[in-house]
Image (tube, rainbow, N blue to C red):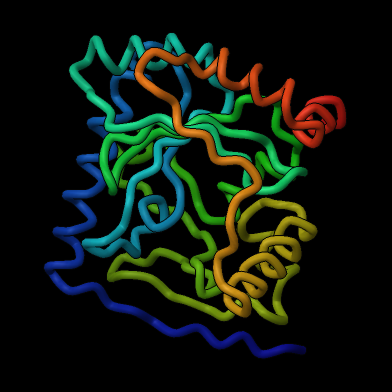
Length: 230
C-alpha cells in the first residue's frame, strides 16, 4: 500500500488577513451577477484558501447569458473594465470571453458549450460560489505545483499528486482522466514554459463579443470544427 505523506502548513495572522481581504473583494465583484441570478464561481487559491498578495481573482460564469447582458449588469453596478478579449488556448479548447477589470481581477465565460472534461477543470483547482465565500467555505483542489491542498482549521495540508491520482480524483469528485490530463498539461508547462495561445483577439470599445466571435468563426476553420465537435 502506498504511503501518503502530507505536509501541514499553518497560516500566519497576516495570511488569514490576506485571504479575508481577497475573498471580500471576490464577493463584491460576484455580487452583481449573483443578484441577477447568474451563477458564477471563483476557483484556484481563492477557493482553497492558499492565497498570497499576488493571487488574482477570476470570476467564472459557466453557463453565461449573452455577453452583452453581462456587460450591462456590470456597468449598472459601477464596475468598469480595462479591456475585453476572446481567447482560445488550443484548437480543441472552448473559446472564452474575458472582461478584465485590472491586472488582478476579471471575468471569464465560455463562448461555446464546454465539454464535460472542460467543465470539470475548475473543480480540479477548487471552486466556490458566492454563498460558499460568505459561509467561509474552503475546498480542496490542486495548485500549479501539482500538490493537493486540503484546508484545515489552522491552514492546510498539502500532498504531492503524483502516484495518488485515483485518490485525488475521488477527493475532488472528478474523473481520474481529468486529473491525469491536467497533470500532463502542468508538467508540460513546467518543462517547456507557458506557450502562446491559439487565438487571442482584443475587442475595441465599439465591438461586441458576438460580432467578433462570428468573425473569428468565419476566418478560423479550427474554431468551426470545435463548435461542430462538442
